[in-house]
Image 1 (cartoon, rainbow, N blue to C red):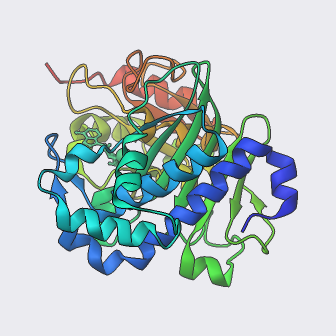
Image 2 (cartoon, rainbow, N blue to C red; image 1 turned 180 degrees about the vertical axis):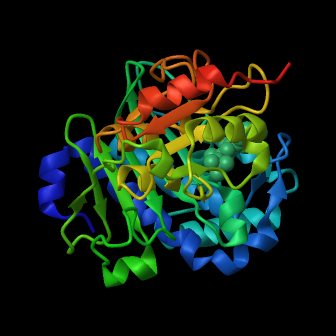
Length: 340
Ligand code: AMP
Ligand code: MG
């Protein structure tokens, strides 16, 4: 699946991550029609489906094989399957066997729960389906895997099964990518790449050169409840943005920013003191940075991935093509939160 030049360019960890995500991301595509009937609601009111568990099990199994000592910090755990969980677990095991022929019920539950690791000096973080609501509504979603060492993201992969190409419309339209989506992969110091299948050459991604906020395209969530829309609108008005926003689910937004398909990505918290989950930001942030972009929180601080399962020292996220970053931070200072 992965071209040899990409492996030698990006190193073993990135090659592993891309391979693991590519294998797992085939599965939600195969069960898209089955996903809605398996959806259930977690205690935090967010949805989880067959696809979330299947992807987590497959990636955890591959990690256990290749890096048996590495810790995995993942979004899902098997307790969300509920008790009794017979039928859904059987469906998960059946799907996992497509990629892991040795899967049994006990192994699959153990693989899923391998994701309960604690963040330490070196660990992987996984959102098996980032944007589950996007998956369910026919929108964007991403399989997001990142390697964090000493609080800094070293490798990031986003599998985006419904994203044809992350750049502006005139960029290379791969026939197969229109059908199957693709993968963004970044390794620190080695750039961000877009790949569709191993035999097609990977394309290096780069952010846009838009410097005037009036003509900038802004990315934000579909889910109004994930962003403080009042402040978002204040900031966009202050910037004088004239382009309509690009509204999509998941870290597919980060891939689009990295490919130059948009220029600014804003995540403005809806509640004072709420903090982002690391698996929602890690892969995407490196993919933007290695494409030449800049990622900070809303006050301009770099994201600090050394604080556990959430970004405890960061409030919200702003990611840009770098050229627009200081302008956006200044607009955020001029438009403070009205939350109390
Ligand atoms: P997006 O598609 O960009 O809105 O991001 C989806 C991710 O947002 C999900 O994977 C959740 O982890 C996360 N999320 C869920 N609820 C909230 C919330 N109230 N505020 C911010 N993020 C949330
Ligand atoms: Mg998520």
